[in-house]
Length: 489
Image 1 (cartoon, rainbow, N blue to C red):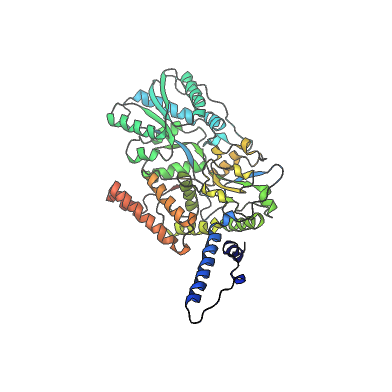
Image 2: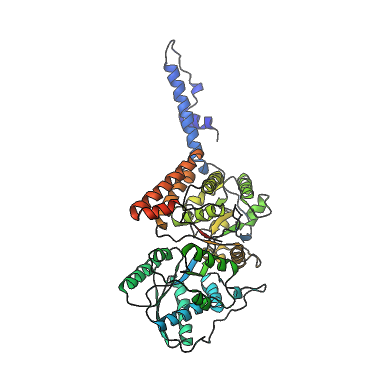
């Protein structure tokens, strides 16, 4: 929209109402300055409210084709974030019989047949070799024969699942107890934070209970760093991992955890990997025939989509909170950085790239989080950047999909390429607050590009100060030395 038109509309055409110009007066200069200021102010208004002035996105008729893939590769092409639950045992068990029962139960949960049923019923991806083949799953049935009939004991099992998943988990536990009638499993589905507090209380009380848990991979950090977990010995790992072993990236991940933590304290059980979801019809209409394989292509495609539709079409989980922090963690690691530090060279480059990409974000990005994806089918955006598969209801989306491009196959592709876990530090929530501060200043408020390094250094300093005041000098010093970092393979 022409700026002069706005000025004339609001204030009238000043040239049509000329005023006498008194000689030797400075009022003329004042008037000119006032007009310039008005134009500048209106111009600033146009720039700030641009998303409300651009033409709307073009609609697409007919059923849309959905493509899903691991996303464009950054500097570290194998960087795929693992979400989901980990399997762990609390410290303090005093009964050898109960401990044997816990090993039998954990082995059951990791069995390929049970893993497959988890995928069918909850969407979590299996981590074992036997679940996969060129023809699909090989072992799909839950086992019915116990490894050792003499196992007996009592274990407490805490898990954190949605209420819709509870009937399935209950059936899994019941099937296990049919196999092992002398094992009593006392189970509870409670929030991850409640699992943490319950385990802390029981271990501190030294009641000797044998506790097994399936808990979010971030919440396990409070228990690990607090010393509340039992290490998984090599013999226990051999007993509980699937007969065919875990897929290579999972094996590499457990090896990395041993080297990073000094021992293995938890094991990926049901995993989830954020993927990129694309409306291929929308890309094709803009002249894009293939999915972007790197960040340069992503930027070019973002510009092409903007040119065709007149509005940003790349959606980002940018409403703030854990969703934004998680997506930024994915981006920074994939570009070779350590998100926990904020201000490494690669961290800065990541924010610089996202700053340049942000003009092509969908206007919806400010409210999008881990349950938003339906805008794909209505063409509010054509690419949903890094969304958890477990949150995407393909039926609700109503788009055509390909069997070879299935969510399971793409998740497996990402897992085989390489994975990483977030270091489950106790202070992850504070880190999320600070990274969100950086996101708001740099992207949402579209701050000065040249100040990106200083903004990130400021957040680094804030993190250091928080650790120093909340914990101690050792934790803060270890932080500055890069001790806390992604568990990446």
